[in-house]
Image (cartoon, one colour):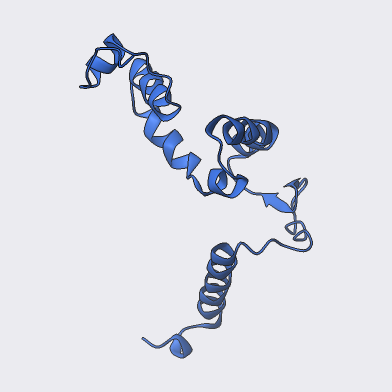
Length: 131
């Protein structure tokens, strides 16, 4: 079915999706806030973005992320852009599926905090100190 043959709401939805994807690809930030939804008793904005789902998660992220990103940037000696390119949400989703000790080990591996010796042996590496 051709796009012109579809009902107007469907065509508008497709065009909005395409425009949104283009904005995401080009990192275009909105210049002004979207108006509140009609009939909404309260609207939450974080920066220029209207929060419509996962409010507690987004509030927590807005409060904690800037300081954490700065720490990660300094610790890993990476640019701000490089740190922002990492898909932190996917890492979080993957870690939620792990047992606590596995999650901790993954974090230690990511930040190169694994001990020399026994911890490295558990990960299949040589346990002898290279020094």
